[in-house]
Amino acid sequence: MGRFLMALAVALAPILSARPAAASTNDLIQQLDQLTRSFAGSAGIWIADPATSKALYTHNPEEQVVTASLYKLALMAEAERRVDAGDLKYTDTITIEDDDITDDGSFEPAGTTMSLDEALESMITISDNGTARALWHVLGPKNVNAMLAAQGIPDFHVQIDLDEDNVATPHAIGMFMTLLAKRQLISPAASDRMLARLGRQQINNRLPAALPNGVVVAHKTGNLPGLTHDAGIVYTKFGPRVVVVMTWDADEPDADSFIADVGSLVYSAVLEPPANAKFDVPRTAVLADVGGSTRITVPITNIGGNPWAAAGTSSFRLIWEMRDGKDSVVATSAAPIVLPALQPDKTANVGVVLNVPKAAGDYKVTIGLMDADGHALAALGAATATFALRAHQPYLVNADMTMPTVMHQNEASLLITHYTALPTAGTSSHPLVLTWRLIDPRNGRAVTQGSLPVGSLEPGAAGDFFAPFIAPNLLGRYRLSYELRERNIAVSETLTSTVTITGPRTYPDDEGGRTPGPPVLKAPSPTPRFRFPAPSGSLVPNIPLPSLPPGRATPSPRPSP
Image (cartoon, rainbow, N blue to C red; front, side):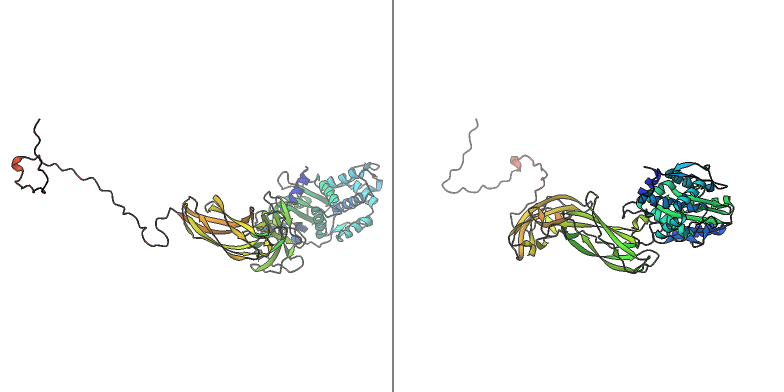
């Protein structure tokens, strides 16, 4: 891929891709004003971002200036129009006649024959005057001017005869380059051919002179005594910029340096988008039936420095796109939504209708701004916002489930489901199952999940389902997410609650006292051992023995062995 085509690919990035915004448009204007005031000559300037409808900077934009070799841009466009129409081919031959030769800037002798493609290349890339005069004769200046008028550029006039001048305003040359940058001059194919040819320009001592190596600039220079011009498209990291600088009454080296400085300032500027907004989008997933549409209301605040108009070039639109889990675009706004007039820092509520895919699943919706000409502003730094949409099969039931917020490991808690059947339940019963997920709030991941049957939903019925919910064998605080399903398809909204799981319970919730049972005794501690003296006769007191009950023999001592 050539350098120009690579730059064009960057310029045609997805409509809602964004770059970091940095508002330096005012800085650029001040720097260009200062540079222009310090210039020894006079200048007409037109600088624009082709993705917006307003110029970024102008100075003497409507001054009628002799174009010098910039008129060759118009000859190239008329030739490409005829190639598009089939009236000419690149292989057709053109002969340079004696009256095509000028005193300066003619590089081919009279009688030289070349193809149309070769003539265009010589006229543009090295600004050969002989091939330009030959093309002027072949194409006819009246036809060239008619083409310019048809393209909406009437202030760009090619001389009808050699007694008058080629003239144009900086604004008109800027319009020519803007159409070219937008691939709207003649046709997209013709625009691409012209941009590629301008990108091969060999006179690069002005707009490209102070730019880093490798920067693509599609441009055309012009010189006559006292006149020094350059006009083209500079492809910056943030998109193309149209830069037209036409100078007069200045020495050529000073003019060259001035134009190079303008190109450098424009290239390095990170511009404020023409409009910017803050979108207060839903924080939880928008739920919608598959294959239909759903409407949400989005508060939108104008956070830019300029008021929005209700119509015209200062009006703006809202656009959206929807992507699936593979980041493929599956839906976009059918038409841009016209935003109301809005002053800076003011907010308006805007209704957005989303087309819901036919496949159930989770989708990401991104919304952003577009200008009145249909250019998405995200690539210029305007903010976007995203939110989730969950497309599901039509729900069968409205459900509200309650359970204790404190549970005990592996023990049952009463789950009560208050339900009302929706008309979509039809005429048959539906066996419902509650599916649940326990989510760690620290990382949003499910740590365990399960399901339990709750009962059958009858058409038109309302009431309560009762079911035991066994707390997982975990401890801590979790987010519990649950919904009703039939054959593994959600038939109700997903609900969430926060629960705390503690250890096994030791006190019943309904008694308020200790569970009856045998007393739990404290284990005795070991008793210290005491040493008693051995008994002796002198120490034994004379204590009478108790009498034995009648009828029992008194034991007699056993004889010693």
